[in-house]
Structure formats: C-alpha cells, structure tokens
Image (tube, rainbow, N blue to C red; front, side, top):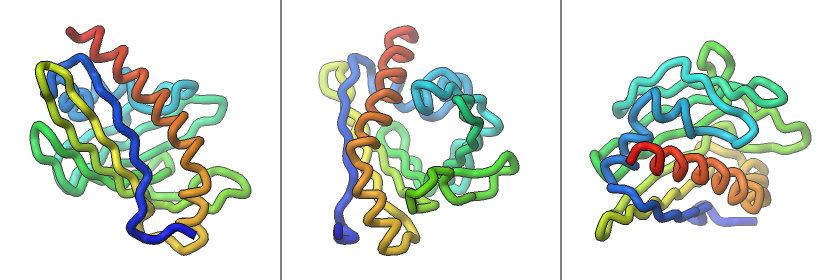
Length: 165
C-alpha cells in the first residue's frame, strides 16, 4: 500500500513561453483543442477559470464520458490547482466508469510552471482526494496507465503550443 504523502508526478518541457502554456489551461478554445485522452476529443460545456470555478467537458471517445475540474487555486502565471472528477452531463460527480477498478472520485492535481530561456517546464502532481484505502491503492496501481494517458494529452498540448507560436 502507498502512503498518503506519495504522489503521481509527470514533468514535461515545452519550447514555449510560460504565459502561453498557462493560457492553454485558462481558455475554452485552447482546452477544446488539446485537453483529454487522445482517442476522445472534448467539447467544452462550461469554463469558469478562477478559484471556486469549474471546467465541465464531454469526452467523445468510443463511449461518451464527462469530466469536471473544480479549481481551488490559480496563481498566474505559474500554478493551477484543481480537483478532477468524472461527472454526468449536469456536472455532478460520479464514480469513475471503469468496471472492476475502484478509482477515487476525486483527484487533486497541481500544475507548476517554470520558464528558463523560453523553455517552460510543466510539473503535474496528482494524488487521491477524499479517497478510501482501496481507492488509494487502485490509484497507485494504475500509474503506468496514467503516465501513458497524460503523456498523450501533453503531446496534444505540445502540438497546440507549436501551432500558436
């Protein structure tokens, strides 16, 4: 079993200014182009990018799923913290739709951006939030899958940033 202070972390560098990377998380048009699983482009239902605000979206893959961010902290231009959950079409949090996997309903995510000479490093740290012991164990058991999933999403972000420069 993993302890509560362990986290899932992924780091990526982009040949783009930090402000552009931050903006890619802050605007509806940008998120619509790059956020989400590679095989499930999203439709933005709503975006209220501020602490206390929400980002509600539909993932259009082999099956339709919904997700929601609940922003807890935003410090421009370098930090965004949110709780990510699966949701229904109304934005209500639901149990993740993966048969046989007891994944937490809430994942706390924090992105930190740093820039050196026009190269921005994005560090994403994720951990279960309000989760049972079994949900925590499941979260850490699927980190290889999460590395691949976030890797694909960040590849899409990289393409978006290249297009915008």
